Length: 266
Image 1 (tube, rainbow, N blue to C red):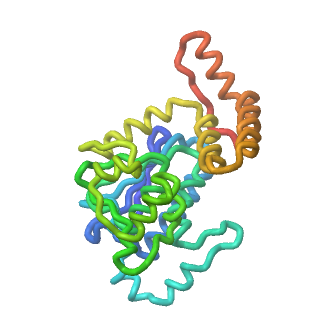
Image 2: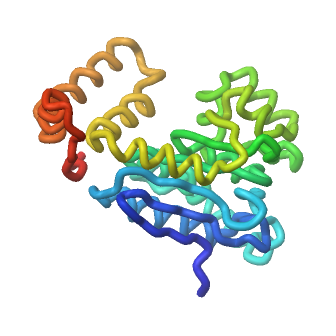
Image 3: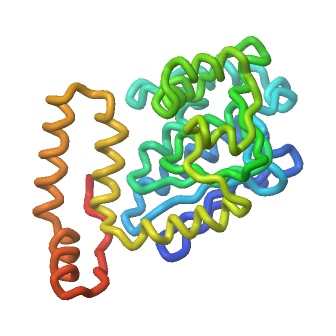
């Protein structure tokens, strides 16, 4: 069976692409499962430094392909069942699995970014978009709500009131408007090139520091102050005792470029 996700790793950076261009990378059960498998595989690669997610063809992702899904209606209730030890079902894990990858994940958005597509983009740590891309929490058009982790990621990025507005209205935003609201960090005519340039910049930093920063912000930005402070202390002690901190400190003293080793276990 033809793969619906392409993934190549070069110089520690994974190039992950939704590869169903003839359908604007519309989501099928097979594509969702491939997204999950790809994220889980990359999660265990300690040589990895960053991930760039994009879509081949004319769109990032146009959301769920209802025509395809309706051909196998029995898969819908199965896909809705959560895996107990993860707390996510197939739809949610296709997005949230990228939060679990302990390296920066960068999304490059162009064309349609609708429904499940916007939720995949929001699961990344950083987003680059063309100014004319089309962003929408499209589920509202069909009388539904975002159910691929979008409720959490939307409210984290734009606040509860704006998240409710986007969900209830299903309004279509341009890439520039998405940026202005805080859904995307950069607007550019070449999102893929700029996403890779940013990924290469991140790859020059300590992989242990990047992983610790991602854990802290993802897990504790909404925690109580006491819990956040405790998590900061734990992460910092581990970093101070780690090899990559020593490499950074020595290189800094000598004004040299640090040559980091692979990310430690966590």
